Image: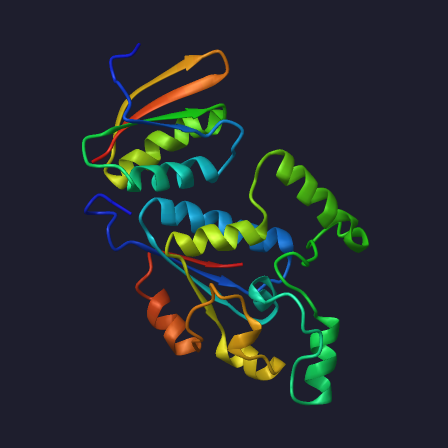
Length: 78
Length: 165
């Protein structure tokens, strides 16, 4: 599952609402359009929230998968 | 912050009237989440809510004895606010802070810094400041323009989300 090679990885594990969205926004701000950010989270709410966040901010959700407790969310900067 | 065209220009305006720690944190959770979505956020701090953005120290503030007494009794800043429930003479906030830091939820001080860095604007209420004898210098550096009710309304009437906390 390395179809989307991330340009940057954000480890947001251990963080809860609203910090995963806040950190994702700050991480994407430093990236260029078209680059891929991988967000790691273990917060089940973020699994729902980050796709909504991406939709609201014009960024694209590429994929979500899971490895043990870690949820991996691939976002492409819009 | 980049946003989809229809999100661009959307805004949230929060009135923080309460000086309770739990309510201030609720206001900042919403403010930072909205800022992360690219929304414009203004927080209008009024009356007891001013305590959230007061600088630490300076117990005696105000011009006359009533203001001085009020400010001594109402002493507070981001690290010294009480809970709206289960305050238990300060034990409640201490327990809540330790529970929150265990879950890596930012403290109110950290929230203020994060929100400000994300472009959230803080406005202290002019009338409350006059009544309490407070000046702009009594507030943290992140604090923006001092405004009155008319300025608040001119921001609020164009906002998509308006909250009074």
